[in-house]
Length: 101
Image (cartoon, rainbow, N blue to C red; front, side, top):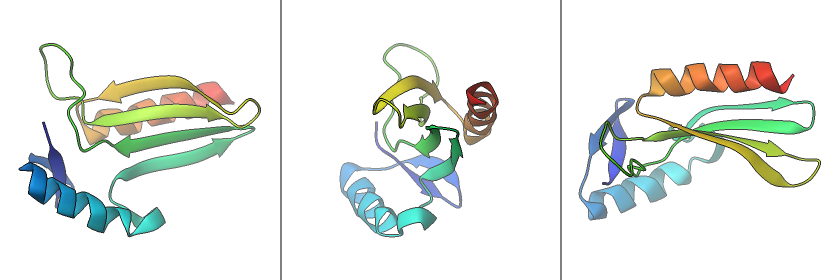
């Protein structure tokens, strides 16, 4: 259920190790490993991140990455998509950026 990044690759971790890693990585601010990409397009922010938790609610690979689109105009998250790999998350991010233009 809990995951950390080791050399950029997600690996399962006990909750104590996850908590230490999560806190240390979060302290890096914009240099956090959890940030895959963030792009501002017009009045929208497309944000893709490593979640650190498996969001798979059924069967299938763990969903560890997420892209969300935030509308600065109305203050709402409008799109949410989750992925099992960083590569899929990067492709999804690029598609959401393209469609936000």
